[in-house]
Length: 136
Image (tube, rainbow, N blue to C red; front, side, top):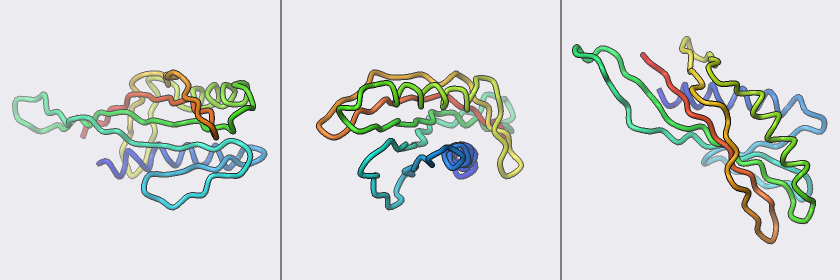
């Protein structure tokens, strides 16, 4: 099920990023990626939690976890561009909506939450995440 959950989130993000002007590069887990020399990019991660089965008969599996997107902008450019991207990504994944893929519907259980920004010599990063749930 992780493959379906990941694909549902990543396809939504990829389609949105490709439609931006200019396009926003997206880095995926364990896929070769060269960050752009200038301009923003996104890094996404699927962080699964324990799978649950809360039925007496053991007939339903509940897959939960976090989908994380790191918004990465060049250091020294201020927070405005990163904050605009976080607002757009928050709108892309509204709480209680569903992402369909492979005949399954992944529910976004919480709104995207911005975490404290991270600053280093080369980049300004705002991590954000939402909780998801898929019951099959």
